[in-house]
Image (cartoon, rainbow, N blue to C red; front, side, top):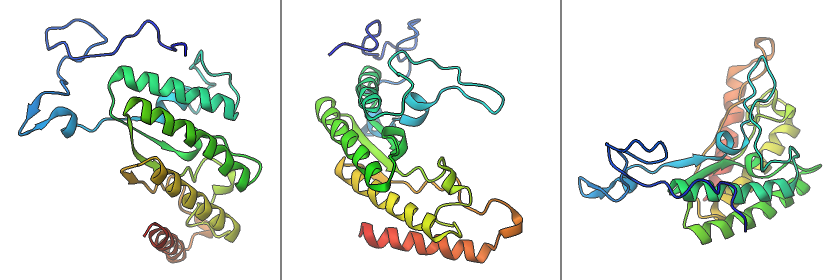
Amino acid sequence: MSEFFPEVGRIGYEGPESTNPLAFRHYNPEEVVEGRSMQDWLRFAVCYWHTFRGDGTDPFGAPTLQRPWDDGSNSVDNALKRVDVAFEFMSKLGAPFYCFHDRDVAPEGSSLAATNRNLDAIVARLKEAQNATGIRLLWGTANLFSNPRFMHGAATSPNADVFAFAAAQVKKAIEVTHELGGENYVFWGGREGYMNLYNTNMKRELDHLAAFMHMARDYGA
């Protein structure tokens, strides 16, 4: 398999006097501090969304990051290639963990079933990469904010169809996080709450959110 970063070797500890920009000067993963190694104290995880999916867009402009391995499509093939890129990057960085939203690693399909099939295909590649490198999943989560269906929230949505879709998406995200040996699952409520104050009923929102969380807890148990 060809390298995506052939000019970069594994980044190691070189001490505080090093002038190498691609070296650790203070982080020595093997150094023991208060009975534990730095790597055990500092459980660094590479975030998939910023590191491999962010395109440099801000509220006033177009994307500014051109990634040579990315063909610009939201395809499964592109997502599979991204896994190879990510694990080469993380291996050379020496990061012990990574984390992701479901939509970071796999594209949404035309239906929930198609979306789940896409995710399953990528999870299989992620599992292979984890086994090959020893890098572990720190946590997974569901992206319940990017799709316009979530404009009034996910768990707090007044739309029963949206609430049900969000619940199914979290169910699948919990399953794949467990399959990949994730050490935790995160509830990322980035778009919870109604769109504007005219249709906000805070008690009802919180009741919906509580019901959603109870359902997730019961399923996870």
